[in-house]
Length: 357
Ligand SMILES: C[S@@+](CC[C@H](N)C(=O)[O-])C[C@H]1O[C@@H](n2cnc3c(N)ncnc32)[C@H](O)[C@@H]1O
Image 1 (cartoon, helix red, strand yellow):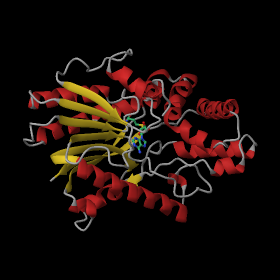
Image 2 (cartoon, helix red, strand yellow):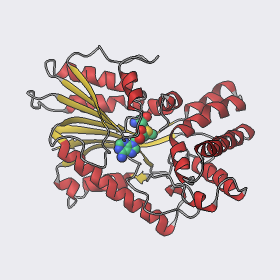
Image 3 (cartoon, protein in one colour):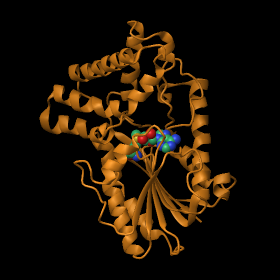
Image 4 (tube, protein in one colour):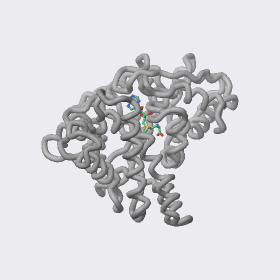
């Protein structure tokens, strides 16, 4: 994600997703039985970015945990990849930005962070009471191949599509196995995962202009006009897999799977679409195409720029790379400005609540 607070400033929709799903987190806290009160209660936000989108939800969750266990120390562990802007996260949590934080409202609370990938072990066995993650598990541990005619696996076909799905399956099972080992008895995982719903909808693909098609068309145009090379186009693949509901739940319902054998159980699954706030504002309020383009493209840029940057040759000077990326997002803006109808980054999530038996 782009650092220095850009991520949560530009992603109002991701905050909506978390806020709208808050009752699932609070319900999970209520459902946890009496646990070992001699050790701290540990909650985590896995793939937290700068922490801004989950700040309100985490604050409410911590208050609910405190109400249930008045004497128990609470550890709040934020996790993300090593290159994440953890400085911005701690500024956010400690109330050093213009965003109001929960800090100071819950006593006996210890906030810390881990920069270990969620594809690996992150917590000591049987110590995690409540694991939360939003909009992060679609990041796979490795790109299995180059996609010949698209930038994202949703546009891939044949063997290339299957390779991404297989990588996604392996990573999801590993994620579940590791979390299962880390969960305390009767602990919960509450996961809001990007995915493909029962109607084939996914992020930015809900009936209007398909966002990943637009990304791909403009990147192809950059190749055809010589702004990037053919190799750079091929090397640009989002390290992501969007899974279907079945792909998420299979390891949890198949009694022969390692995940099931580890004691992880599916308590709840549902899909939801959360409307793009920038498109809604454009459609229902201002109807200003220029404003829409200027507000909408940064939300796409906040999470997509690293993938386009990764496709560019390392031989290019940093200024040249930045110039190409700036020109690319300017072209995206222009596309929306010229013909704003139908553009929207609606969020499509598969919501899961899991329990450690
Ligand atoms: C789209 S952001 C979501 C941020 C926040 N959870 C939200 O819902 O707004 C995805 C985050 O997942 C992180 N991420 C990706 N792969 C990860 C991994 N293997 N381990 C931990 N975090 C990861 C990214 O660095 C990024 O901060």
